[in-house]
Image (cartoon, rainbow, N blue to C red; front, top):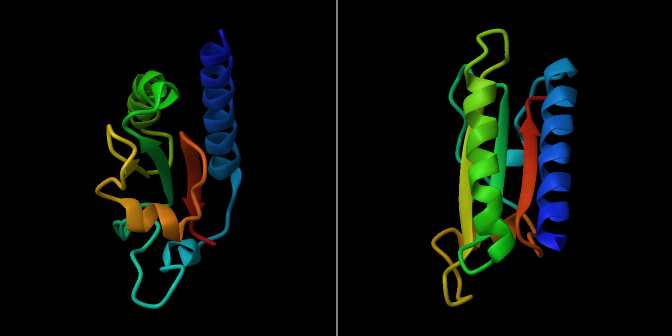
Length: 126
């Protein structure tokens, strides 16, 4: 039950974040810069036509993350299916692997100061 509540809250936060972003008129990807010199960027460099990035930071061993993944994918498909929506780049970052060791994107997760899983962040041009 707790996992369902967490997933529902995460889906609502994701929906609300996208709605706020869609109505926001600022333009800059300042949040994509590395947190430390020489460190990995929090997210991949955006394409020229992308106004927003939604990043799911997850741990492969986390049951909440496993259950959230299809919701994240569904939100991506729903958002991208409406041509009226602004272009969004959807990314996933593996912070921890299936044994809770550093995942393939551990540096990006550290740069983004991720401490709980799953964490969804919205980045936009301002």
